[in-house]
Amino acid sequence: MEAKAPWQQVAILLVTILFAHIVFKWYSQRAFFRRMAKKYDLPCLPNPPWIFGDLLTIGRITAKYPTDTHGQLVPSLLMKHYPNIADMGVIYLDVWPTASPFCAVWDPDLIAQFTQQNPRPKHEFIRQQFRPFTGLKDIVLSGGAGWKKWRAAFNPGFAMSNIMALVPWFVEEALVWRKYLDQAAQDGKTIRLETSAMEVTCDIIVRAVLGVSIGVQTGEDTKIYPSMKRAIAQLVPNWSSSTLGRFLNPWRHSRLQANNKVLSDELRDRIYEQFYNHERAEGPKTINSLAINMYLKDKGNAPDNSNEIDPDYLSYAVENIKMFLFAGHDTTATTLCYCYYYLHQHPDVLEKLRGEHNDIFSVRAGAPDFFLTHPMTRQRLPSDGFMLWAVSKAVQRHPAYWEEPDAFMPERWLTGETTKNAWRAFELGPRACIGHELAMTELRMLLVMTVRDLEIILEYNEGDPQVLGSQAYQVTMSEELTAHPRNGMPVKVKLRQRRDS
Image (cartoon, rainbow, N blue to C red; front, side, top):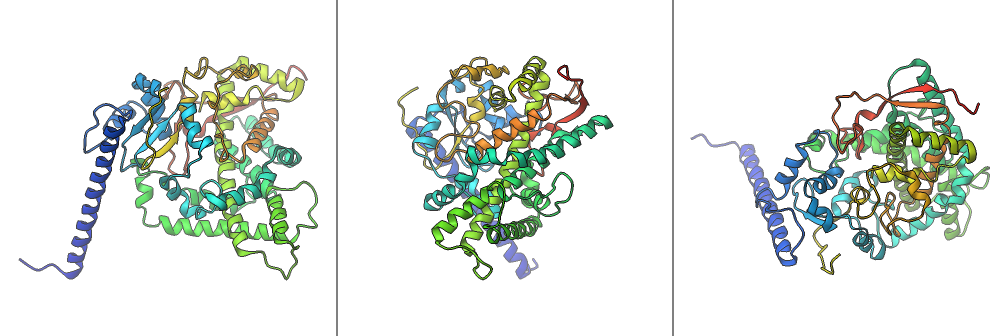
């Protein structure tokens, strides 16, 4: 037999080592889960096979639904197919290698234990998703003294009083979107609502943070939004088959680094500009300018052209602003789309909302339900070695906590009678979403500026697939990191004759 070349021997050795590592890891994970389940009598799915864990059971359930259904719907689907799970309030799932073993929790009081009473750090599985994007310097993923410092620095900018001062700027960006929708109504073409929604929400969050209108909607911006979207498209949220191609792409890291550098460089220049023009800035204070205020207060002197900004401060500011831009355009746009979706599905509610706009320009009774509709024992349960998942979507569809949880009932928010800790669209506790007030203000403003004059008409086909009764179910998209409405929510826009005009 001919001897193998040295490179072949090395390749065989590496493959053997890799295979052995996978087998060892596989065995270790399954053994750990079995051991913990037996020791603590954990609530689990029935009879998981040793080799596949809960993957087969979850696979059989998800196979009943469209292949693009997003993974965050899995707990809701499990509750539907295993009704007894809904009463447990918690379930442990062994899904390695697609994700770490995790504990999915939908009992509000149990969730409060690790988010409000004793906040736990983000699991490494979540941290590794964003490490290439922000270096874990952002307030979403950092912890300890660093998190406390930067949360305090950005809190003033996200306070309701400051957000209200920024509303005139937001209106300017919203008017650009309104002009686009008016043109879509004239053209009569079907549009992907989410595409333009992400653009307007990005323009608004950039305006709020940096105080500049970069023109994402008009195409003037060629750096911040495009580079952010291309960088996000290279992040790997899990190890499922839908993201395997992204993970195995040999150019993924280089593309991510290149686009991340473009984004970071552009944001760095914007921060420099704010820093050195800080004393001369007019108008309302932006989120970043108020953070600069705190930085200068701590530093004890004012900047000038010969005084460079602290590189450490600059680095953390850049990474936090990147996360603000990602979070501030992504989920806000998705929520806005579902606002129009449910209003279209419930014309009676839409008419009430229009009347309310005509009277008082408020949607306070309506907005939370967009999240709601689309969102015990003394036993001690372990958390070490498990990823804790507060499954807010499942909480918000649970009849134990909500009257008619699948019904669209905005008036439920007028009574003040809700289960404690159950509404968690922005999470609760010290690590709750810092942009809560900004997002709600933004949604109210965009609705006020559109629903009275426009009809947003869904363009899904009658035979399109549904998940949990919705054709606009949340899907996994190859170029996105989070869940998005199917097909970007295709709609037609029509101008309406206002009865009050």
